[in-house]
Image (cartoon, rainbow, N blue to C red):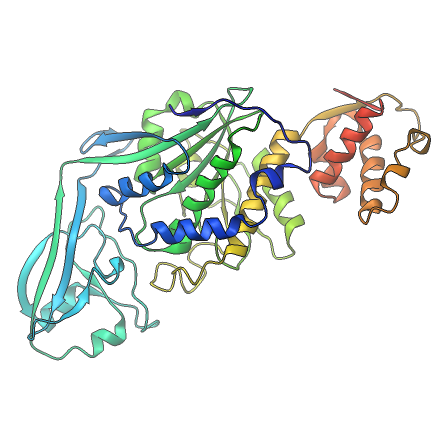
Amino acid sequence: MVRSSDVRKTPTPGEWSQSLAPSGIGDRLHAFAAEIFPICRSITGNGVRETLSHIERIIPLERTEVATGTPVLDWAVPKEWTIRDAWIKNAAGERVVDFRACSLHVLNYSTPIRTRMSLQELKKNIFTLPEQPDLIPYRTSYYQERWGFCMTHNALQTLPEGEYEVCVDADLAPGSLSYAEHVHVGERDEEVLLQAHICHPSLANDNCSGIALLAHLAAAMHGLGTKYTYRFLFAPGTIGAITWLSRNYETSRRIKHGIVMSCVGDAGGPTYKRTWRGNSMIDRVMAHVLTHETLTANIVDFFPYGYDERQYNSPGFRLDVGLFQRSQFATFPEYHTSADNLDFIKPAHLEASMRMAAQAIEVLECDARYASTAPQGEPQLGRRGLYSAIGGDKDGYAKNMAMLWVMNMADGRHSLLDIAERAKLPFATVAGMAEALKESGLLVPA
């Protein structure tokens, strides 16, 4: 396993966001998303491997290839799909549908075909969106072999009757499924799993944004000392997570918290989908971070549909892995269409998403329990210079209240997250003031 173990500095409360999500990172995230956007990805094949090669320019990865037919839990690794070209040509030999212009034009995992047919026969294998007539849909045929194309409904309506040449130059044959991991080693063996799916072709929000965020988050973590070990997993959706779980049962038992990330580049939300338990540590952390970051946070309960969080939360694993997105999947009109392009995601939204991920890591890393050394009554903070130290600070009132709440709840039983939730204050404010109180001798670790 690739492990980033030469850690040095441990950020203090309040420093994590700048360390992991520095100002201006959104431009780099968007540029990386643009770099991988044109690649035709699927659940297997060279598109996945090419995407991993781009990630490897940022962080080291350990790749795993699992052969077609390998049993993985209740599934088996499917055939590998290799696509070279695809088109529909009219009687004049002109491409009216061209895979080279947009990879969404071909049914993902389409079986190969080369023939001629009437428009009436052709239409049986063309997918459109009549309700969104100017958009190309994203459709797949992973586990039911068939051929097909996707195009705008308006373009389909303009096709004249006649004979058309149809070609999907592809192979669907024994090969392997690819996934990759990067592990940042912390003080503990307990792990935080962070995963993005790498199987969608040319969808900027629902694929490229999550890949870009996790790759750069892993790079930013290099050189930082952490309490937890962080496992960054890049795998095809559903079958990739299932394959990883089937091969890593013992590793999965070390996972204490986790987040699947996708759709993190648009203007919506942000949205967090809870774990199956609904009240796990990561559920509390994400709800706290998102609600303090914005008034539009959307916290939803677990349901057994969506992304790979449902695999980790299945009865045989019950791992505390939630789903972090901006707009919730399938709720925005651009979802799984050609409108999910590079104009749909923005650097500012990507940067905000990375900052929220950094804040969640800060809570996991800095949460602790303390006991007051002066528990009888309220200690005199002024003579210790604690009030004067924040005099004139624009956040002075919040810091004063954080100190009072910390001292009131520092009984050895309540954590800093407990206090932040009760006080309705950002965790970083509470944790920062706890550090000041500890340095003054008023707190000791419980």
